[in-house]
Length: 135
Image 1 (cartoon, rainbow, N blue to C red):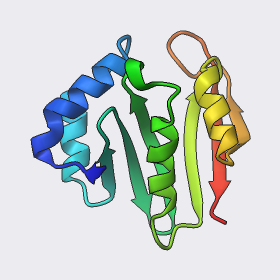
Image 2: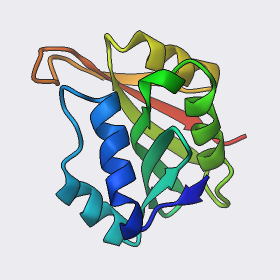
Image 3: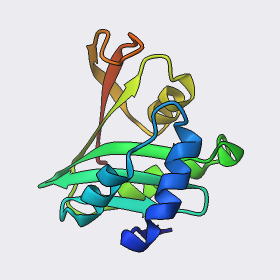
């Protein structure tokens, strides 16, 4: 696992397209995030996690795992790597209410729902806002 640089944009694009075929991350957004001092991408062989660090909080922007590796611990390993960042007391994310595998994973690692945004996504799904405090 390593922190992504501009040289990793093709791998980021491939993972995001495979994981989110209906709504992949535009390359320009990934380029912008890599250039931002507060945004980070961690890459593993089969996945990535993108997050924004602001003072003592981290907002997880994307967690994507290639379909062949889903359900095998890759997502959890990426989350655990982010949880190890020093000086962070709280982690935030949003997830679609119908994304049951992601909801189960987030709950297993200690996230809890604190708010719901009704009809947030284009398809009408609610967004569940989740948080986890660092132990």
